[in-house]
Length: 472
Image 1: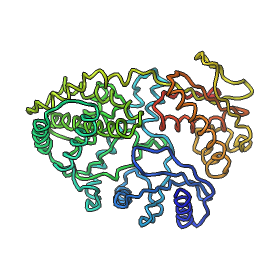
Image 2: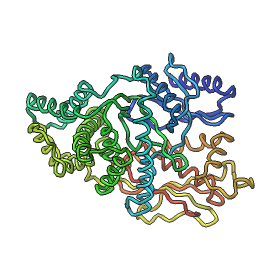
Image 3: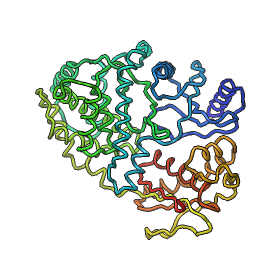
Image 4: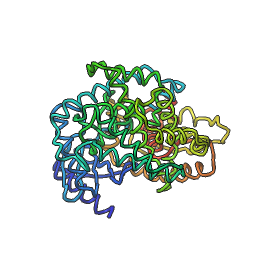
């Protein structure tokens, strides 16, 4: 099946640009069944997508073209064969808001810097554009599986939380009393206007950063809904772990930019939407973690519980939902659930270096790690136009991804080798792993490889990744 998908995507690439594709690499899987491939050829790189859910594909393609018409930063759809479940879209690179957030905080002692606040404000301004201009542009008949975040959609999320989180984590509850509270909560949520475009999964892993600007992906679940929901998704994104004072600053900024007149009313319903969003996310963590046994999803639970506890303590709902509150208080104090975060997280140090100055020293006490020699790869440093750039610059990235086909053959087996160690280290509770990439000057090849592997590990595993370039 995999070969058939690749053949179809290569043919789609040829139909798009009239040139042949020369190589491909599969991107790390997400929480969905969609599969993404970076397709490289004479016309540059593109992202090929395979998804068996044709209605979801139709929604994404339709929404993408509508957003493009009103100037929202979304990937261009180059070509499609939706009957076969494939389409080709613009390659936005590999840096997500989440990976940027992680890198900046790692280099600033976990401080949420003014740089990050500025980027989040850009994201919020773009969200307003999506909610306002997008609403007029979108064909809501394409929404899937439902055209609105209405009572039925809300109930799906609440049942998801009940059956995949509460039951699988063995939380005791009165089912009828909880259903009654669900209905009271939905009545309250639906009091606000809810005919704007609701992105649905507006969180840091679905926001790309391209030349310092936010671009948006994975909005195929969009539908009509309230303004509050997507802001709640962004600011209470579990593993982004935004400090509470920064959340309040960003929420105030959003309301100000929106021009909303009654901030108290907006915030009252906002925190109710935060709760239903957290419950939906916890249903997903339970399904992926408890049921599918994907342990890295469980690592988000303590962050979600901390967010939920903060809302319960500081922003109580103005409605009576006693069984729901009893259940939420029960899980936020559950030692077994909270203990998921207490296991020591593996720290993976990824470095680039120059062989002129030697291999970096491992100061962790682990005695060293992998060293990969990049000097057999094509060297952009031999060309005058690349000498002032590094492996992080787009010009050098395009050199490796578009002009030469050796890099994928070099990195693919490295990923397999590294994966074996990361998974075994996590299983055995080891705390440190070091991965080094060296080249002649430590500027182009080694930097590019270190960036790619660090991103790949960060997206695939729940580990701490520390990236360092020794020559700059």
